Amino acid sequence: MASNGKINANSDYQWTIASSRRGHLEQEFCLAMLLYIPYTYGIYILILIIQLLQLCGAQEIAYSPTDTNIHYYGRWNQSDNIMISWWPGAYVKFNFTGTSLKIKLRSSANILYKINDNELTEITDASETVDLASKLGSGPHSALIASRTEKDSIQLQKVIVDEDAHISSPSEYPQIVEFVGDSITAGLTTSRGALTSFAWLTSDLLGVEHTQIAYPAVCLVDGCNDAAPGMESQYFKWKGWQDDDNWDFSRYTPAAVVIMLGANDEKIVGQDLNRFQASYSKFLNRIRSEFPKAHLFVLSEPLGSLYGPSQAAVQNLTDAGDKRIYFVDSTGWIQYGKAFNDEAHPSDYGHQLIAKKLTPYIQAKLSDPSLPLPGPPANPNLPGLWQTMDIGGEKSVGLPGSVSFDSSDTFTLWGSGKDISSTEDAFRYLYEPASVNTLMTVVVDSHSSFATCAKAGIMIREHLSAAAPNVVLGVSPADGIMFQSRPLHGIETKLAAKVRASVPCHLKLERIKQDFFASWSSDGKDWQPVGELRGVVMANDAYIGLAVTSCDPSVVSVAKFSQVQINSKIISSSSPHLVLQAND
Ligand SMILES: *[C@@H]1O[C@H](CO)[C@@H](O)[C@H](O)[C@H]1NC(C)=O
Ligand SMILES: *[C@@H]1O[C@H](CO)[C@@H](O)[C@H](O)[C@H]1NC(C)=O
Ligand SMILES: *[C@@H]1O[C@H](CO)[C@@H](O)[C@H](O)[C@H]1NC(C)=O
Image (cartoon, rainbow, N blue to C red; front, side):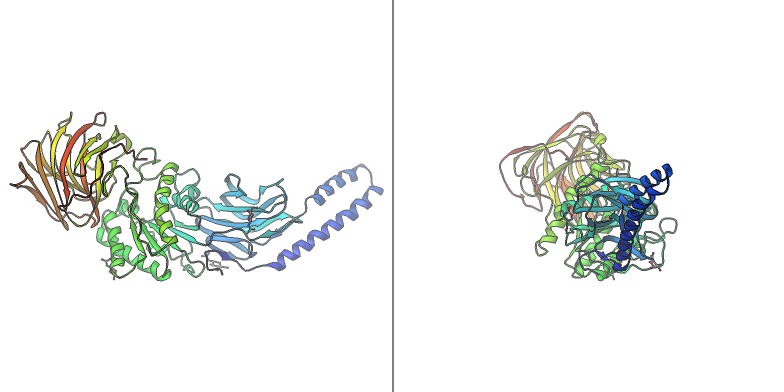
């Protein structure tokens, strides 16, 4: 059993040698028959000769799948000299010489394979003896064979090569990364299932071997989906569904485990934040005890489902002294539009974007664990820690927004978008990370808009997906100064208070844990309360910044802000710049 992630099955040299000797005997028999037969019988014999010639020319040697040169990645079980894969994207690698390659499968499965640097090729319902390559050069060649989905259990019976050929160990990466999740990690709705998932693509970018412990519709918590087990139980089993056998964690040790869960829990159970968080903490602690040294990356669901409790579960372990667990916000990586195939599943392109964004985080920790986790790359066109993007689906956003700054505390935002209201938002956001206690003051110098529901102001937002919990203190032609919030992911936004006033005006929004306080001033000296919101359930680590929506995706509105301060500090200064940052 090797430590770096591969399972070396028990070797079965006996079998290989026996079959090889049989090959020679058959050949001798063939030659004898070829010399003898033509003298005795007539035309029928000629046909027989031709058939024998074919047989003699096509000698092959079959290797047992338990040969030590064949390396397995994922959860494979050996049963009667057959290697059986569970979970999606399980794969097998080996090298071979000779001109051809076949495998024998005990039952049918959709498989993908790759010979040398050729394209991945898919075989639907591969069964029995499957031809993977012929007419190759003499080699050596590399082979990779993978299962497409969790339903495609590969039952490998034999690896068949030319008679004078042999198999040998494949090239493999020294590290393995385990990906744990739901349909997104399994690559559901992508062109090649597990092999076009972000998990597979990230591993390729990192240069690591990997495993995908994932399947569609799985929750974290037990019993949520038709009483099915959740990942909190199933992760510790051999198979991706109900099964009593516990997985043997000594089979391989990943250098990192990347976990993305929560979308199904939210969809099916609803937002039971406490239960989810308790389960998640327990789950992470169990993984930690199986893999004491692995880097654990808890990735938010791209649409931000149960974002707060996921973050809190990580915090729980961090508080207990775990220095190798990280929460990574993926909500700004992809938005509805060409990055999604439907309302839940990223497209091939969406998976590629996730892989591209995720890779540097894992890479940093795998190469030097002592360095802090890198944040998102700094925006070279903005001062300080500021980042900017259009939040919301492509259609809801409409025209792209932009930001310019005259000094480090004076910004102009151009924003389009359907609105910041209802259950989802579409707007331009200029933001930076904010802790659980934070304070922002600005002067809204001007606001030009067409629609009366256009809005511009300060926003504290849990994450960067369209349905994120948020609190806004801003101005709008319809309400004057308005104070509103979406207190939970994906629910209706409510107006909390409004004040008849017009720009220019000073705004101040403060967060103290789960309480939000809004006030305004005409001169920056005499502050009047606008309202307060207490007990808003928002993740501790959130974002703060400026938001502008035109409330109409076909137009852009403009707002100018000055004296922009967070926690009474002007973040930093640099030279003026115009930023036209596309969302990728
Ligand atoms: C693994 O294979 C053994 C037989 O070799 C069998 O007893 C066991 O049930 C299998 N476990 C799973 C989870 O398939
Ligand atoms: C396996 O075969 C490939 C393709 O010929 C080759 O590049 C690689 O070096 C081989 N690996 C090993 C370990 O021999
Ligand atoms: C935090 O983790 C500890 C174990 O370290 C666990 O006992 C506790 O229940 C967790 N708390 C929450 C709120 O999840």
